[in-house]
Length: 388
Image 1 (tube, rainbow, N blue to C red):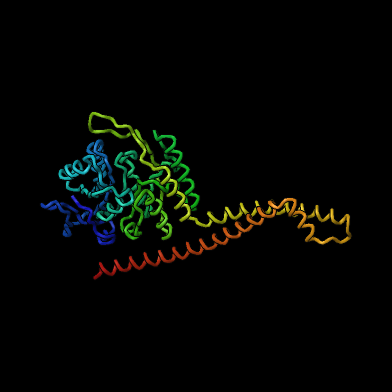
Image 2 (cartoon, rainbow, N blue to C red):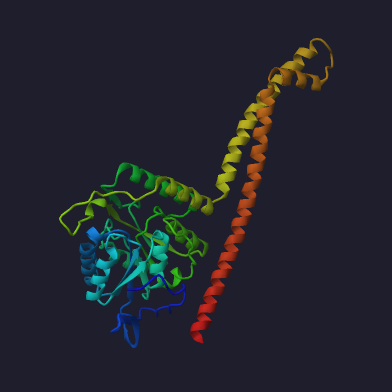
């Protein structure tokens, strides 16, 4: 069992190319690196967050372990289960299961901290060359793990996403509201990111461990998934997708009761997080697009105001040969003051929003430069530390 106290990101040594030390538990139950023994097969760390999953935990861990044993011809593996403050016995069941298998390690949060913090905790305990994140409910079959690993090894990508919305992917038994929100959220984020990634909110992914530990993640909730994509994009990292099957009918409780599958999505919070990261990906569209809308509306209103001024001028011209144009404007304003006020307000909003868009682009570029510089400095510091 591991407590809330965890090492900071970057304290774990990076693995060699295709070689990793065997990680075992000593008699005290702690993990240790047997540095004198090396295997040619890469070590894969499976990170599984869990919150109140006692009904399905044991059975699904057995399924997951059986699936990983089928990969032992190509990979060594460890499983990091993060018990995120569960109150239903999840921690006890996980600890009992971990005592049976040496390569399963349980990390406990004393209180529920959210998905993002659970993943960040899991990442700090990983010793593998590759890190794979999986849902404990197995709504994504464990068979995706081999596909993810094959893709990341074949292409050298830093992130490989299991995407039900990619070509060839499928979604089954997901409630209509949850599915609709997820589809449109990912379409919106994909448009904002301007990348050929169709699923930015999905959790099931494979990561290059050394690269992931450079990202300095901050999110505590579900927004950690687009945060990882965003920071990977800033570093111009390769991000691949594989088609996946998301199926909510997979859950099988271990006891003689079958709980109803419920969505844990907080709609308002998820919607806010989606718009927030849409803004982070492309802030200019939140200002420039509305500014163009306001500009064309003001153009329409102001043209209407000019037409009224011209009509008033022609009426004055019938009485005097060279009437004062300002008098025509005054007459038009008295007849329809709302037209002039609305046109002026819309034009000012258009100018202000366009100016904010320019500032947003400038700030985004500053952030990208600072983030890239900070990551390069952190990487250089780690390399120097390991050389020393």
